[in-house]
Image 1 (cartoon, rainbow, N blue to C red):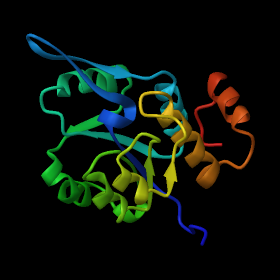
Image 2 (cartoon, rainbow, N blue to C red):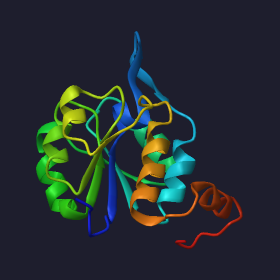
Image 3 (spheres, one colour):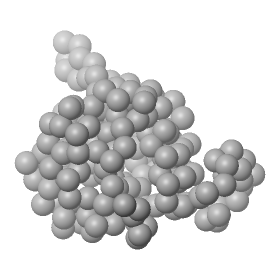
Length: 176
């Protein structure tokens, strides 16, 4: 059955979605995460249509995620423990108007209640089970880009995605 209303928010988990999910440690602890190409640009284009926010439950690596998401990409990121996530999202977002992209063993709980759910090819089986769309790409390997273009075509823009990309490059910041 086609969805009649349009989503307002796009909420993404960071680790295992925007990153490969790998945590790189040395003798001093966690020091790096692997972020993929193109996702920032695709999110900037998508932000013409949706409010974009990120979540992380990685307390040890949050400074890394915050540096990339908030400082480099200019999107909001919140640090929320997994066991508080459902209630936090319900308090801060209208799930009936929120797209959620997740990958982990707890994300399906949100996915079954949100407007539209997305997982990556290499996501946990439960997340994939409750997703409306699963990317062909793995996390950290342009899966967010694939999800963004899927959402734009599904809900907002019926012309060729190439036209929207060119419009973005030419500085058209208005919703098309």
